[in-house]
Amino acid sequence: MTTGWKLATGTGYCEVDGDLVFLDLVRDKYFALRGQDRAAFERLRAGEPNDSEAMGRLVATGFLARSSEPTKLDPASPHIPANDLSAVADGPTSLRMGFAASRALRWARRSMRPNRIASTVEAMRNAKLRLGVPGAEAAVRGIASSYAASRWMARTPPRCLIDALALDHILLSHGLGARLVFGVRLSPFAAHCWLQSPGAVLTGISAEARNFTPILAIG
Image (cartoon, rainbow, N blue to C red):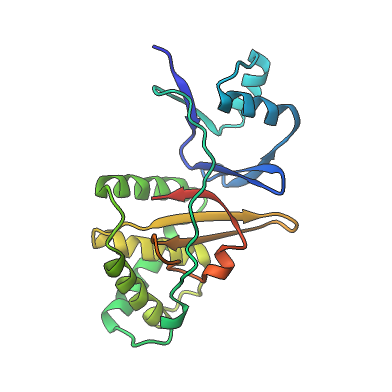
């Protein structure tokens, strides 16, 4: 049976300042593909032939996996909404959400460890696939707004990844899906993570998210 190639679990890429930058959650690293290796990847993505040496170098990176479907190696390309929930951070708090946030943040702190982050994200991807569609915008924003207003009750210091994972975990517990996005920029290098619905950035602010190029999107 003819097989193609796909990105390995926990892997995404994007083009930033002319470079192809990859995120590999399994190995907990970012790297750029340049020169002959980039040319080989571009040929593979376009369905053009590569010699065995070039393919060997690409496979050795660990970011490719065999697929029973035709080759599909698309970069991350989610739209980043212009709206966010920054205005609700000073809104009314909820004791119930404060406790829920504390529990979710403890879970996220464990789940974001380098040896667990890839499996955590893959489990979230599968949960969202089972849901099939994004959560209703009003319901998602309502829970996210309550989280933002009640976040101060949790002792865990704010951090983009832990908050995105925690809110995603809470939303999934309500049967609601949102998109978890990892972003990157160069010169100087920096990485960011946020949760978004189709209409709003749910963790952090939109202006900050828009300073990064999405490299991996879950949901």
